[in-house]
Length: 285
Image (cartoon, rainbow, N blue to C red; front, side, top):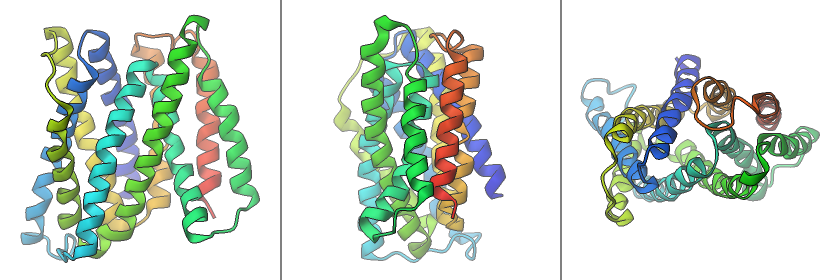
């Protein structure tokens, strides 16, 4: 179930964000994209709260105060991280912004060094070097877009830090309190914070269709990854499999995208593959 779920989520990620990028391209605001996808994530997650009634062994329910605070913290991190993600998506092609978000799996390893004093080995040092080269390759594109690509890097790295924190909190507390408690609470916090984004004009008809499809897909795949981590605790394996979204994003953007992905796909695919190698090196013991 883990490989099927994580690999499926990686493919859905690329497909969903291609549609969201298309909706922005056709006139939807980044705020509108954020609002709809946040509510979609909460809607897909809420049914988990009733699953202990039917599957008590698989979906245990053991709430405690520490897990509640962790779920709230994860929801807040996810809220801000989602803002950064959509900003990165608006600034650059999917084949640039989506692979950059894969750096969050390396950040999880770095957090373990900073917080748990894990020693730095040659694998992590090599992963860091590969990441630098990968980021350089991923930013290839027309000269007049350099500023936007650099801005996308900044937004994506901010999102990566926050999503790494979400993963760490999920790994530490979701199995303890039960996915049926932790995950709905986290996404309810996300939905509860969403009105703070304010109002935004409705999307044009062409953009609205892509927004609805992309938001529904992203709303499903994100809770799926959180659920897998919470149920099985195999965050390392899940993150490695999920990191294949970097390759899917380049391939799908080159095939159906509306930016410069087709023209620069060789360099970006090379960067994506290097980043995937860095992620595997950083996470595999």
